[in-house]
Image (cartoon, rainbow, N blue to C red; front, side):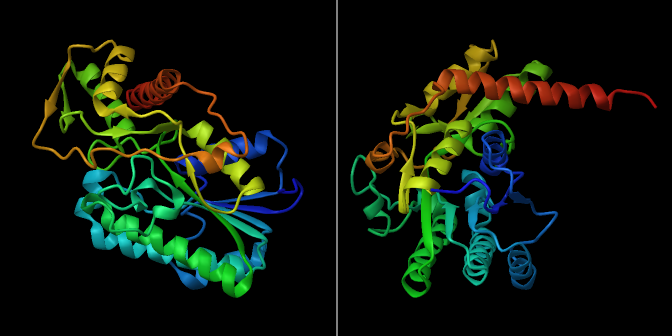
Length: 318
């Protein structure tokens, strides 16, 4: 169990998972937290990273920092994605070892699994049973290397670790980017912009791809539970699979734009199906608290509130 008064270092504290994880930890009695964001330390730099870890000597580490792109970003920036993520993960795990960290929990990704899928439900022991989907292969291989490094450091240095294999996550503080963002934040931004401009939304692909989507507030809960109770690779998800078409219909309804979108089939749809065996997560009694619809509503409201405020401030005269 993670003792509440011991020092916790959290990388990527301003990102999607890190931001929500920091809030959850702080609100539930963990006060000795060192949040790290890029402006404080460039984790691609070895000397800078190792010095930071030596200074703080954390007992526990949540490693959420990554260079993250959406499907198009992964396709267009393969070398940069691989290099930066390899450097970040290598420096953080080495830093954890040298600082005497008791346990590190790192954020992986569902795209580490091979394609075609070895099974309808992807299980943790299948990760290295083939090559990842070509649309995300460089990012996936960098994340696989992080898993292999955790295994090596446990064998050589007895470093305890957990590797969170996440489904598609979304929520407040996501990267709402229509070109390089993940599917839900990208769609929310597209619908918001189209509503403001009175235009129609172009949606990539044909809507047939299916995914397990998990609200980031649930993902943060799962990550803490994993740190305290599990080791090794652990799938997280909601246990339900939705098509992109269903997601679009939900967002269109929430935005009151049911008849204001069209499909751009020239754009990629991504891997056709991805779902996860959650037996390891189920073994510790974890269950999501948010329904997909409620989570989408909260994310839409959060984004609209922040964008409306930004637009209002940009019109103020000084």
